[in-house]
Length: 287
Image 1 (cartoon, rainbow, N blue to C red):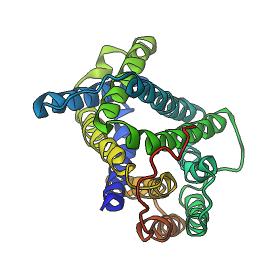
Image 2 (image 1 turned 120 degrees about the vertical axis):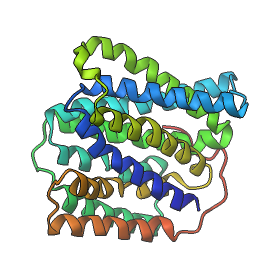
Image 3 (image 1 turned 90 degrees about the horizontal axis):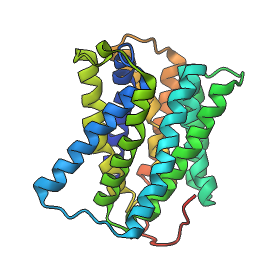
């Protein structure tokens, strides 16, 4: 069940690519991220109030949230700024390299997961067809992949030690407080915030559904090893490509279909059919 929930989560995150791409034709990226995380924070905060759930404020919870937020912030910031200098295909491929980085960080080299990771990497290459040249944007995007991998590793440990909903709200609030000042620095014109269909759809997908997907991830990481989580997440570019093909009319050739099929095969081999070990509280040090 947790693996299927993560697969649905990854589908939602794949949907954020075409939704965000449409919204960014109107609003600059950092301003969009500020609105996205503000909306997510308000929704999670409202759930806490309506459910009468207690927000944990212990120093250890705050420290864990701060560490995880650092990696999450740098992941989004490096990915967004890196897109200014590199192609979308290079960004998609290099970001998804966390599927390799996570098991390297954890030094977990299970044969099935390694085989599936290799298949997924080949599938990613076929799907996004990145260029062989390297530029500043590519370097920044590799940094983004490292940051997202470290965030996945952190969540494996922290969600098993501390209250996961509290970790979620503290991270969302911290991301909002970091991105809102960047909105002022970006100095977007007033018309960029006009409530158009593209902007409202983008905020609904990223601020509402993706926030729910983040909550599902934090629940699932209490039960599933981080390297399997990363492998399941490698299907995100495939979902993004399919949805962009369907909704935005972007082309997806035979090579792209083969690549996305390889990614899903890798997920089936390495994650969905693997036995789930019990929680291993305290065995993984955060990056």
